[in-house]
Image 1 (cartoon, one colour):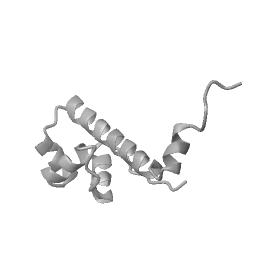
Image 2 (spheres, helix red, strand yellow):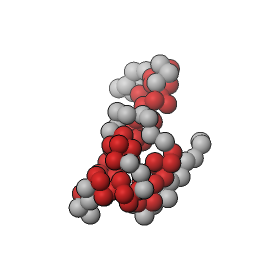
Image 3 (cartoon, helix red, strand yellow):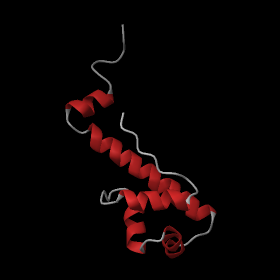
Length: 92
């Protein structure tokens, strides 16, 4: 017999209508973390990183703020390119 009662946490979030938001927040936090790590490793200031991304410092600040959901795909793509990566969005 299982020690766990009920469903898993993803099922709970889905039932409450919160799964999509939770996944989006987690993705945003990963992007912000990777970007912060890249900046730290390469000793880049926010201003220098914004120039590298060809965007504004305020757009970079929004991207680095994991609680701010007003980030465009264009900004995420510029961040990915600054990391030498490619942004991929997959619908599953």
